[in-house]
Image (cartoon, rainbow, N blue to C red; front, top):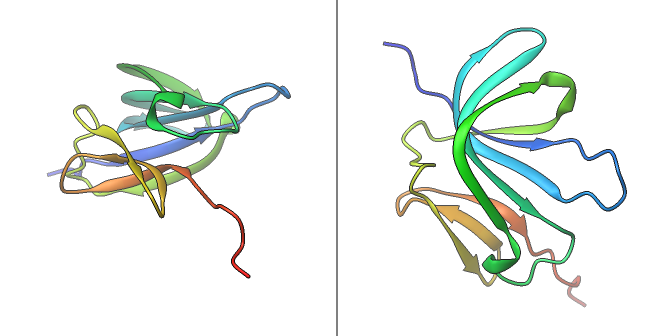
Length: 114
């Protein structure tokens, strides 16, 4: 049986006022030029103070060229990206959680401690 691969992908932003673009979902197919992923998108700017600052898109299938992918993280293969919710965490920022697993969507790095 083929293992289900769940990824969080951050895409390249080419213009100054661009928002962060993330997709969390299941890799359907890939080849040397592109990846096909069925998942949900998340968009946010530089200043995230709460979960409402992150726009959550609909689930759908997206074809992304590898040259547009800045970073990809593999998540647990049982991560329920379809139903997962955004939650605020004091020490982590905003995470996406399905109740059993979570991944950081926005890291609140805060000020360095003295």
